[in-house]
Image (cartoon, one colour):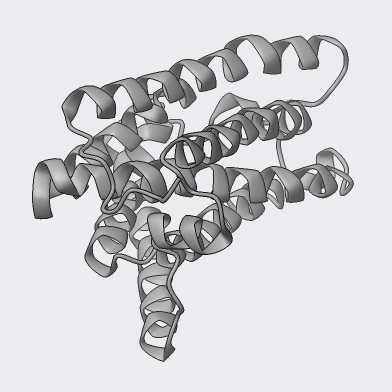
Length: 238
C-alpha cells in the first residue's frame, strides 16, 4: 500500500482527540505512576524519568502506528510523511539562534511570573527534589533514554504526524491550534509549568510549521529540555 500524500486533513476534532488523549496519558503518569514509584522508595526525579519514559514511549509507538496505518512502510515513506529533511547551514544558525533565544526568553518570563505571582512554582513536583548533589549522579543514566523518548515521542506525534494534517485543515494558521493543543498536553504538570513553557511551545511549533522540517523541532526541543532539566538537577534553577 502506497503512503497517502499529502497528509490526511486533521481538523478540530482530531486535534482535540490527540492532545486530549496525550493529556490523559500524562495525568496517569504524574498522578498515579510517579506517586506509586515514590511510595516504593524512588526519589521523584528518578520515578519521573522511569514512568515518564514509558509514557513518551507510548506516544512514539502511537505515532509509528498511525503512520503505518496511512501506508508508511519504508524509511523514505516515514521521512517524507513527517518531513524529516536535510539540515543545511542556515538551519543550524536558525536552531542556534532560536534555541538560545527561547531559553533566554523563558528565563526572563520566569522572572516576570515570579515577580507578579506570589508563590509561583515553575517546576513540576515530579522533579522538585533539590540539586543533583542531593540525590545521585546515577539519575542521569535514567534521564538519557527518557530524554530521547520525550523528544522523538512528542515531535513525531505532534509535529510529524499531526501538524501536516492540521495545515491541510487550518492553513498557515495551523501553528495556533497545534500550539494550544501542545499546551493542553502539558496541563498535568501544573499551571506554573504550563505558563513557563508556553512561549517555547508557541515559538517551536511556529518554527516547524514555517520551515516544514521536523529536524528543526527535534533540535529546538532537545536544546530547551536539556537546558531546563540540567539546570534544575544541578541547582542552577529553582
